[in-house]
Image (cartoon, rainbow, N blue to C red; front, top):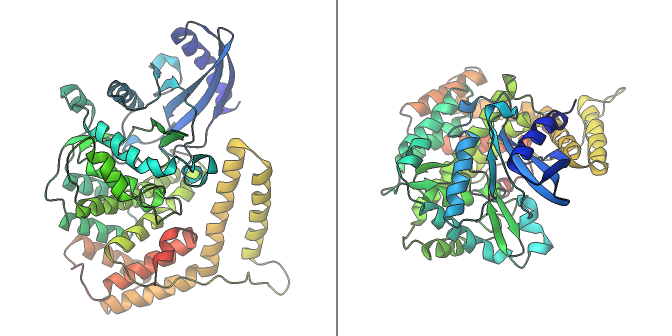
Length: 465
């Protein structure tokens, strides 16, 4: 029995209870969006007319502590109510699920029509007329979110964190994974040395970005995915919106791949007359890429432990190098080399491993074109996973040798690569000066090489000179 089939009877019961005119479910399907929660589309017949809903629920078996700062769906539902009362465009809340509903932890809301896929928002011809307006609208929407009164009720539901605490908690989540990623440690040190001089405390959405906004011909018609909200520095939201991962290849437009920082800040200031310094905005961009590089590793960890047996999670884990490379370009920019593309080597008799992988990738890519919905998405994910393995096979050894050589030079020691990696990590967590000669070059080169394996088309790699 499929996942959607197991939901049908409990969904019928909930809809019958909440919607007086409900007759039956016409369609229920899982959508591909959402790395931390599941979203389902539900079409129903109500008093002879089609009515659509969305079900949001926590991923089954997910360790809630594995994703830094995440909240239960019932709290997210409460935030939707507060946002709606404040005039912020959000879907209408229908029901918060109860334990005996047998649907897990989540809520039911009205379905809205609009575009949510970030790549389409930045490229669709149908949205060409509204794209120039989006950055200003984002600034206005964020200002309204940050103006929601933080009362005792809200404080009881959400964590309140300072920038320093946020950095340390996120860094601790990475340390707990026991994975040596020196650029993450370097970035944590940099952030702690560049804390904002002044920091307000407001409601913070926590995941306001292209991909969590619903856009139609008039602009923003819904702000989605509130599960990372907290009370903290509101500039975090503006910096997160400008993180390169959410520009979908259009790096020249820093606000979501569709707008400028000046338009974003003008929209914000039209609601809240506060100046935001460029330094504070850059700080929160760096933090956003730092947070994303760690969160992707946490997601991969839930797959390794068996808590989230998802085809997508291991591939998401390899996206950590995207966030790390964005940090490189923001705080230690400079030149670097990446492996050149090469012909797949042919063996004297039988196809070589890289060729075998290529044959399976082509098969999956061809089937992705002829499939649809979740099957097409997962087929593409499988192809991407094999692409990473293929590039690791072709370039991994030479990149490891180069990294080893640089580390031996940096420390004047002749230890194994993994020992030197951990030595660098431990020294960065202690008191190694961030200005140590050769350190910035080593980090740039190491992260760029890893990204060339994980995602060679990612725009951060085009920033090198």
